[in-house]
Image 1 (cartoon, helix red, strand yellow):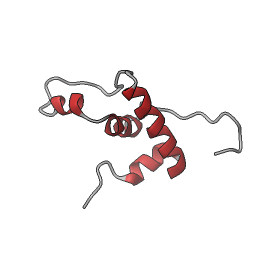
Image 2 (image 1 turned 45 degrees about the horizontal axis):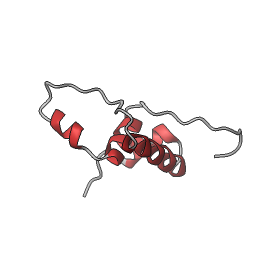
Image 3 (image 1 turned 90 degrees about the vertical axis):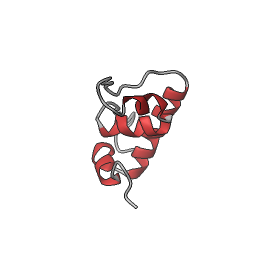
Length: 79
């Protein structure tokens, strides 16, 4: 069973798995609270309906993968 998107690709964006979890979970909470998705919506795609029905966690994962979500450390040396 393959995970889509691959974890290795997500880790390239986040640096480590703990940061990845924080990035995705905070963004998923924002989406659940009503924030709009940052993913490009292309109505000509066959799977554009899936984008609107996608769960907030899945949307957040794809936003991280596409570089739409950034993580800024408040203190240097703390991960």
